[in-house]
Length: 69
Image (cartoon, rainbow, N blue to C red; front, top):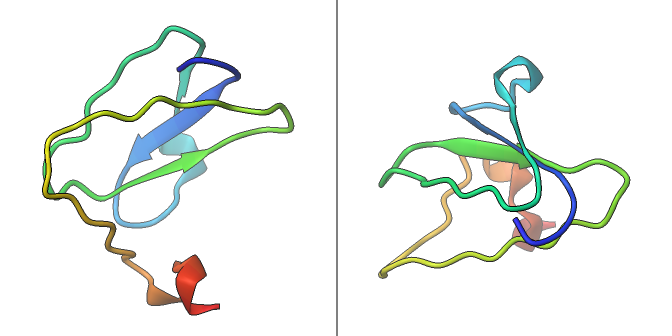
């Protein structure tokens, strides 16, 4: 986390009770093929993402895919 507060959780559908709060300076990993979700609040958030490819984004609910709207 570079700026703001990021809320992150694992699961195949959004569940606010599963969110963990990650403040500035936090680091976390996303295991391969592990469904996950995130949320921000009213403040701007800047996240630095790094990783090894190939990578992909698969929406558990296709209606959530912003490229399909």
